[in-house]
Length: 460
Image (tube, rainbow, N blue to C red; front, side, top):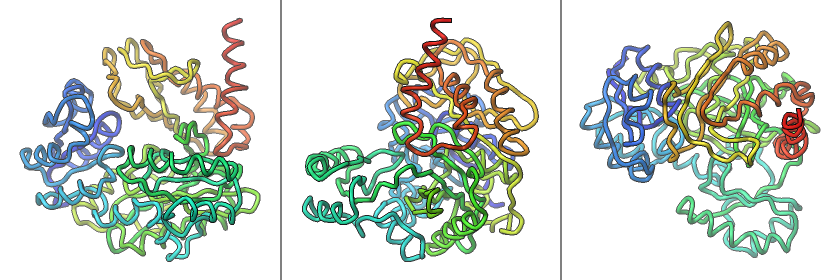
């Protein structure tokens, strides 16, 4: 391995995760951090730190010049962007490479190609991957978009071409609503992403969200099987599993092969995720998008395959070939990840920054807690509310759920509200236990089942 050092251009639990993976490979670690994160766990664990700006992300973690200058000053060999912030910014990837430093991820050209949702759909179709019925590309105006919506039938999704993370999406039920929503969606996309381009997709009713983890070294691509991320609130993932629940083996093979074919068609390098909607009724799957970075939910894949995806990314960035072949990768058991956020699930998920008073982490076989917390840590109000991820592995899904329930009961984070009660309730819900969920399951469940549990607790 030719890398000797890496700068981590991120914060929170993913920064901690990358630092630990890099140290396991013997690399010198440098953390680029904002003023607000000077006392973070990642800053304590890194060999060196570089302050890159004030708390506001746009002046620190989203400041390309500040991050690249920090990498040059630290004389690192590579930059790992983690997820979020600049992770899927093609200009950032190009700037890192232009500075003579390796970018831990795909090329700027690949990020541009796959990061634009419309272009990615076209790449997928060319590679023979099924896509959701909709526009062939960006729609020129309201008239064209309305004609496409009428042809494929309502409800439809109006989606930002440059969107991501579940943002920039509107579900429209009829033509009148479409005429009102379309210009608003374009304006919002322009404000959020600097690009007002839109495209149209058919809504797949009661779809499941299934995604395939891929690894490429520029020449070869392998998949690490699939994950299910159907439990979502406001199109943000809450709970993830690997493998997908009850997926027929024939479907699994076609799904994973299609992801590999797409990645090979662009000479993909690094870790990535190809995301799909899956229709249980027809056993058909449809391409949604490619995420050209490590995912929040990557640990469940690591638990069922034994592959350290972050270390693999670093090796690939060093110029090494993939360390595993496809026939060496297999599914072992089942894993579930719960995202633990600083939010109050009983008060409309209101963000809840504050100081951690007590932290008690469960341990034992098959239990992992990826976090940046420690007792006395003041969770800042400036960033995403993710505190950590509880990941549990079992021999099968039933065993995994039993271990998860026990682990959630043992996980204690006091001082601020968290989403632990939400996950404890989900882990005991009959529909969740039976795998009868889909992407539109969680929000109605929160208004009924979870609300009833909260009332019962108050009256007890």
